[in-house]
Length: 81
Image (tube, rainbow, N blue to C red; front, side, top):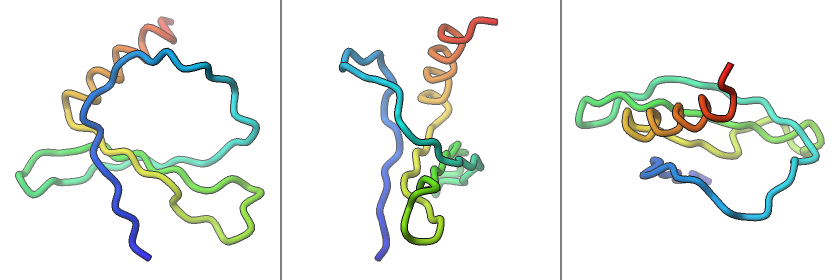
């Protein structure tokens, strides 16, 4: 079954009640060339170690130059060193 994922349109502060997730996953990063010739940054996460089946991509996020720049601003605010 083919999963269709979307590109990240915007990055903004959230206000949800969040907490630390109980498990860890692996993530890959790569460049993707869009049909219009622009470059996207893709992050792909894989299922946790407790997943019953073999490891496979469970989520992908594709960032344009603008959305990646916005994400970088939040990363720099969170980890200023």
